[in-house]
Length: 325
Image 1 (cartoon, rainbow, N blue to C red):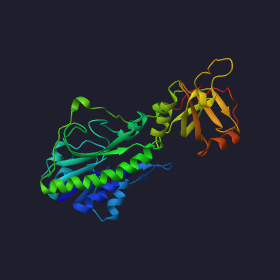
Image 2: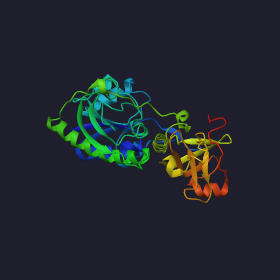
Image 3: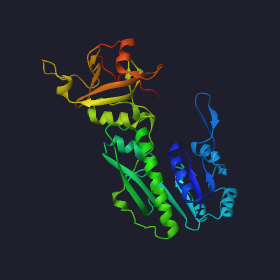
Image 4: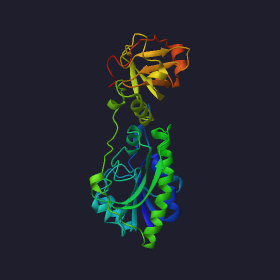
């Protein structure tokens, strides 16, 4: 079976490997080179880099509706288009170029978490389980009939980065199984229950500012979800302090209620020194223990090391000042 593979980020690279094991890949379609890093130098996508290593033809169209691209695609005469995190909807004219049309790998248990950011959204919501779905391409995003699904647990210490890596591996294996079924003519087709659909919109920097009046468990889930981007942060004297790793504890465990019985306001630092744990902040419910942080002009470091270089008095209230743009 001949395939044309569409993908862009590192998440899609294990899937390209899996497709190569079961299909003849005629070409790889990926996003055009983009400026990255401090120098803003043009860099090829991870999928483009991997495809070049396999000596595959790599196409980087600015538009999938471009007549020249569509003509090239039709000349390939693919049996199927395989789409994994390409970054754009595949138009009908492209899908129709393949004999069996197209399939897609999505990192959630559809119909839940359709959209651009299913992995961090699942972690932020406190899900204990997510998964991967292989589905037929449809005109509506992530709404096609399901071929195969596989559940994957969300671990207590998972970040978006660690969960993405695991889902990439599981998804690649499931994609290979689906392609074998498709080639044999035995691939199932199960319509989604659209009434149960939920959506996972793209993350924004504005969401990363920690709202200390939220429950501690929710704050910690957001910190995990926003690693590696956009990274959760709070404000200390108006300056951002990024939070990479944290845990939630109850009021009783962090001794947040003093003898007077008055609970400090959310965002109040109740421990900032040599005690263990060294950096504890009051939340709307419970407390957040900060384990790894990063000042605006510094590197990631353990919270204790940060406090030794940037002393902070108990009673300081975090989150005040102007957030970053």
